[in-house]
Image 1 (cartoon, rainbow, N blue to C red):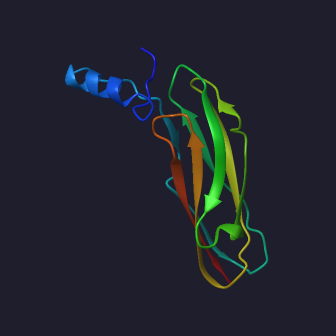
Image 2: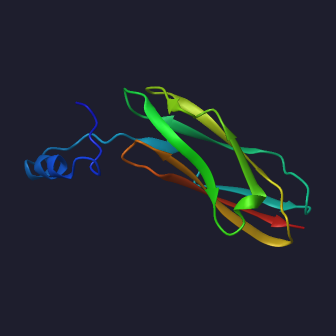
Length: 130
């Protein structure tokens, strides 16, 4: 059965549920819920931390954006092997580095936007400027 994102076909989704059927939802998942960098001197770049994005489907899923948002989003930078898509049953890697611009607690959120029904996926980012 093909995956049907409920946000694209709400009437179909409701009809499937009303008949007691279980719809198949396209899923991408991130291996980490959070990446914590610990204390890093201000202006110094941390060692990278990574998370893996896994496509649990039998079709490729398109990734439209990977961004970092939040109060200190500029202190975090990402690179990835996920764009433009993740192959069926495949994985890709997102690598994040932390360069604090100030002292104290620094936070952000890595957000992956795609065409999976579980979109967007996110990872909390934290570190401390020393």
